[in-house]
Length: 202
Image 1 (cartoon, rainbow, N blue to C red):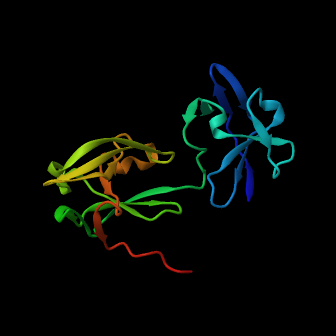
Image 2: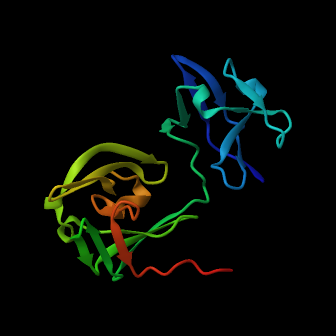
């Protein structure tokens, strides 16, 4: 457990009403969870809340208890961003080989490896290294507070269709700009072989 002052104005909007407005926010970190805001009770006006036992006099407002959250004037999605969470994008010559239904989609030694705090490294490749003729855009989108909104791609190989085998960030957040438009592949939906070693056991 770690609690620290969060030096940003945070607001919660429900309908047209501001139900949380605080410049005395603390960020509460619990192991295995995204961080969350806690506010002095006086800064919460009508939102459902509960006491935060780690911070006497402060309360926690559920993320879904309001319609929109803002840090200063920027809307925040999914959960507060962890100030200690990093994204590093590094050019690499590691080998990436991807197959679907026996057809090679990618075989390259030119990629960007994205290192993200607490997650496995991910290899992203340019479309010139991908059999884009075997991929079609999917309606699926997902959101990451650190990378932005991901578009998805499905594979159509002969008579086989595999939904959402790859994803890309067409307009990533600034810290992830190096992977703009590049593709990465789900190893649960395609055969993905690379030479990124497993994490060391410590």
